[in-house]
Length: 443
Ligand SMILES: Cc1ncc(COP(=O)(O)O)c(C=O)c1O
Image (cartoon, rainbow, N blue to C red):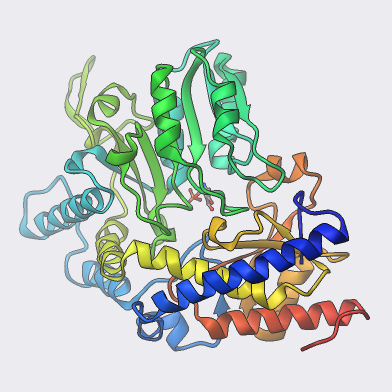
């Protein structure tokens, strides 16, 4: 296996493989020691798609599978109290309102906050990012700083706002394999930057940004910090208060929760000043023909009827993640990444997109097979052994364009993936390589 941007010649590859072999032993021993504390085989029984099917699901970075408890909670809403929340005072509607409040309280606790009103329900991470972009009050000439590996949900709105109101954009460059450099960040920060907007973890490389350090520096320059937490919130412990971020947006459908549910966290004083993106019913204290008094947060950002079954189902997802433990999930993902790496380390035709150290990739293994189109590889994996991965540019086009890479295949693991999943994935990849290259033997 070769590494993009980190080792180009054979001597370096051999050297790195040797180092990897040694550190793999340490990592494997550590993780195997840990392994016993998380019961993956019983976790797998909680997921109907796993229990009732034979697919290897390696697309959790896109959307996670859902456990029974989440599906049951949503069904309970539809079967027993499918009313609207926050409006009618009858008992069925009150049950809905209480369900929504309960999820909000759980979210706050889960992410380290004591104030549930700092958590706004959105339909996804993208919506939260756009609420802040449009509502923060950026003016012509204000600079927004991102990294150069952002998902389009933290990129396209800034392009549009540069056109619409003349904001300026600045990038903090990462290494070729996407690793963040805090020194580079210090170099590009100045007082023109009004908002630092960064992905916590990349959906392409899995690399994680040290947000707490970033926030400290950004605040010293008077800039606010918005974090795209779509790929971090499902995979590691996240404490928004400890990191001192101003805003944090994520998708609950990547965290075992129902499709179309996300949240935006904002410090109370920030949410108070943020203009809503959408106006209408549910966010109004009183409206006359000529005036309107908008409600305080979080309601002011939740206009119109909401995805109640999704929000209520999300509370079961948070319960589930809390029960399993986020530290354990992060460790398990590193373990699985290590297994993949070990399984593929002798295959030169596979090029890794991202850092070579499995512990730096979160749940993400992005790669290419030399000479093959990533979509073809994804289709072959599905056709050969129902291994479900994603292929393409993963809504992070600037990363690929700047590195002259024509997309990649992404296998993303989560708490329900086990050794057998990885064995099947590795075996299928070896088969594909063997079919398309005479040089590789199938082990
Ligand atoms: C890093 C990152 N940010 C944002 C998003 C957007 O998430 P959503 O489509 O749920 O809004 C994704 C989705 O994959 C992502 O990976």
